Image (cartoon, rainbow, N blue to C red; front, side, top):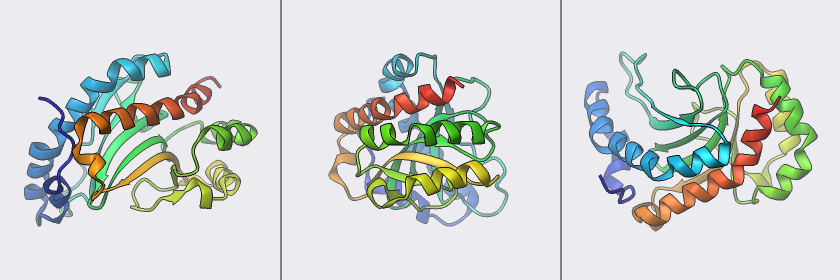
Length: 206
């Protein structure tokens, strides 16, 4: 399958009523595109991370009633799972696409990673563009431009609060024409991962 980007219909998936109906649409419309993206970026991501990265696609298996409000793919060095490890994500909410380097609450070495990032905070501010976004809860459709975020406070909370998370990357509006251009979107994903790869490598070298 050639990747042709995401269309409005993909984002409208999250307006479909019913768990089974919405899941069927996610599986038919969106998940094949996640697999196509992985094929396009896998070699670059392996080189950037200096590891073999494996694709994981959200199954939403724990849901029994409420349909998912977002869906995502994750790239991790671990074949069996990604939630307990630093990982990259590409996914959709109903109104945006996100490209994250993600550290979520199941990560066992959160405080050590936070401490390392706090010690490298000047480098992070220098290398990550101000129009990138930061989020602190992957279950909320809520992200803040780096330029408007107190990065130090966010990292300190990530360090101290058990459920706190740290996600950094790009958030692109569903109406942005970039998303409908498969070639340009793949390039944007690769560029984003290239920008964030030094943080990933730093967090993997504790």
